[in-house]
Image (cartoon, rainbow, N blue to C red):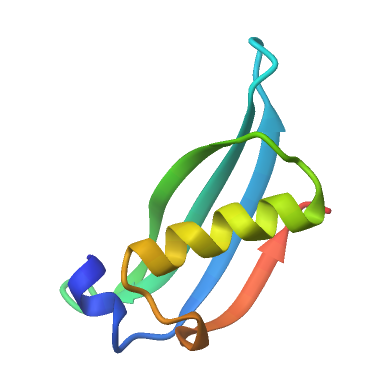
Length: 83
């Protein structure tokens, strides 16, 4: 999936949650149009354990994930979160 990310536009869905061990987890989902089946595919990009649950901390973790996967930030044209 990552190789095709360089030219596609994406919507990003994120949700931060605290699990039973009190670890903060950031889920990053990227829905995209799948050419093979001509349908929308929801792809879980990653689950990130974050130390800083503030807006700045979550953004920093998210940005690091996107950049480290070679996805240009300007390819993200939509964003949704729970708060």
